[in-house]
Length: 124
Length: 164
Image 1 (cartoon, rainbow over the protein chains, first blue to last red):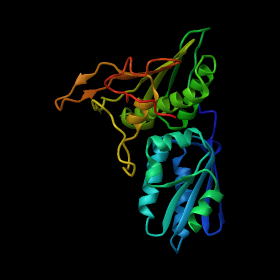
Image 2: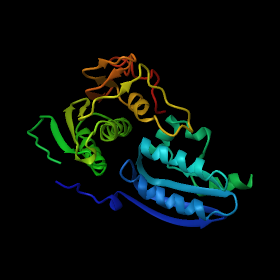
Image 3: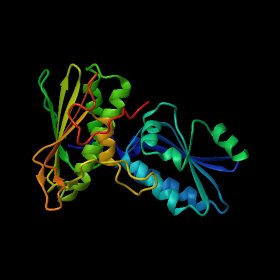
Image 4: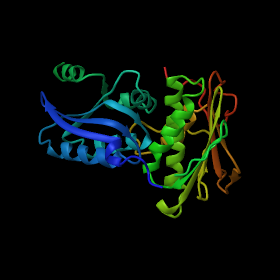
């Protein structure tokens, strides 16, 4: 029997930019199955940066992330550290925020609740 | 994926070790959990633990890759859920006290997340390896409303509640 959902339906990705921040917006679940989709979007956005700046992953519409997703964020941050500062935007109190804090991601990545918050931090 | 259920019986799933099935397992656990007294936050926590256990079976307990079989039994209780995950692997070394790795470590978060987010983790047929670590045969994880998080898992679980 086949899974009832296609992988593309489990995680939808869009990209945009604002105030010099490249944004990857994710909607759905980030798990062992869907991390390749997020990986591709992050690699594309990070590789497009020629000057050092933020690449933000907007996960406010992500309802679930597991250790495969966390590992991907670590890998991307390390691989593109010369040109990219990886930031994460999460819904307050959501499963992603809580899992990221369990992994202490807030100690080495910028984890915030809105793009405005991230933008303000770049000005400060 | 086959589901066979009768009233309050446990739900048994058997599926190939393909990551596409992770979401199916989470949906099932979420659906069964909605019939228990677990809160939304407790369900979030337990879904994460179950996902990690099944992903672990797919990644480390599937000698034939995606042709390997993973079996999941989900037993709903009034106060919570008990989930058993079986794979076809030879087991892996289970450390005495899984701890979350450094934040920038490339991996190693699965078992610590499980331990942090379930009330109880039991690893059956734990054969001692020559290096002193324990091999798993199957893993049973549970989450129940109001459970003492330390009561069944003094070896594996952290002592402070993970989510604030």
